[in-house]
Length: 446
Image (cartoon, rainbow, N blue to C red; front, side, top):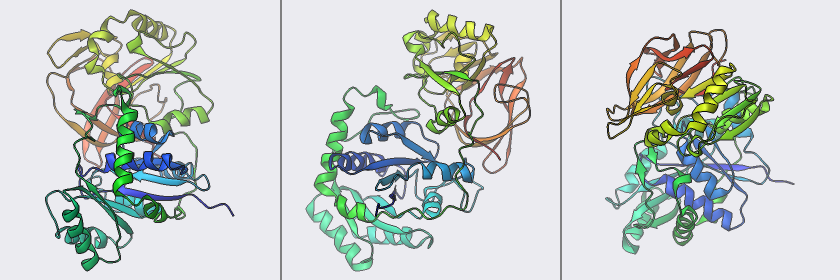
C-alpha cells in the first residue's frame, strides 16, 4: 500500500522567532537524508518560497485562506499530495495573526491553514530571554483554539545545555503531552541579510548552498527529525473540490514575463494557471537588456525591486525598444507594483535621483519619499484592460514603500478596499491595452 502524503505546519508565536531559517534547515536536512519532501508557504510571500525551492530542489506553493477561493486553495493543496511525500508548510507572522476584520476560518492566518488541512503545528519558540516560563507561553498556544493540534515544540536561540534542560523539564512537568522536538542552540552563523521588503532575495546570494548546508547541520545537531516527520498527518478532506480554473485569465496566448532581480515577484500559481489554460510563457531579463519576444501578444511585468536598479533600467535600450514595439503592435501589457512603477514616466531612487521609465502610464513614483503600504486588498476593475472587458473582482496584496508623486491623466484600473471592507478609493491606471497598479493579484473572486 502506498502511503498518502503527510504534512505539518511550522509556526511561531511571533515574527522574528526564526521559523524561516528553521524551515530551510529542515528542508535541506530532510533532502540530504533522502526524504521525499516538498514545501508550502502560508500567505502572500514571494521571497521565502524562493529560499524553500533552493533548499528542497522543488517548487514551493503559496496557500492563502483569505485571498484564494476555496477551490483554488484545494487545488494547491492537492498538487502537493504525491504519495509518500512529507509536506513542510511554513507559516506567516504569529500563529493566529490574520486579516483585520475577517474573523473565522478564512482570515489568512497560519492557524486558518492548519484548520483547513488538519496538519499539526510545530511551534518555533524563541527562548533566548526566558526559561521555565516557556511552558506558560506554549500552554496558551496549545489551548487557545481546540481546532488546532499543537504537535510539538522547537525551542530556538537556546543558550546551552543547562538552558535546554530547564526548557525540557518545564515542558515535561506542565505539558507532558507536547513533545520537545529540539533545542536549537544560539548561533551567529545563520543570519540572512534583509532589506525593505524582507530577506534579500535567494537569487542574490552568491553562496546560498553553503548557508543551507550550515542550516541543515544545525538542524541535524539539535532536532529529532525522525520524530518530527512522524508527527505529520494526511490532510483532512477539503470542503471545496479542487479546481484548476486560472486565478487570472491569461493576458494573451503568448505571454512574455519579465524575470530577474528587479522583477522576481510573480506567483507560481498564477503562471501555472496561465499555462494550464493553454498560454505559452517566455521569460526575459530587463536587467540583461532583454525584451519580450517579437511574437508576444502579452507582456507581464511583475513586482520586485526596480527601485534598486532604476538607473540601469532607464538606459537599457534593448528592453525599452522591445517594450515599445510590443505596445505598438497592441500587445496587452500589465504591470504589478514594481512593474507598474517601470510602466510609469519616472522613478526616483533612494538617493533622490530621478530616472526615466517606459512612459506608458502617466504615473511618477519615488523611493526617496518612503511610506509603508501593506495589507490585503479586494479590488474590482473599472475599465476594460488586459484583465478583461467587464467588471472583474480580485483579491490581492499590497506591500511597498514607494510614494506616488503623480497619478493623473488616465482612467483608473481598480476600485479598492482593505480586508475589513473599508473603501480605499481608486488605484492603478489604464491606457489602451496597457494597465497596472501596486496590487499583487492572487486570485479572482468567484
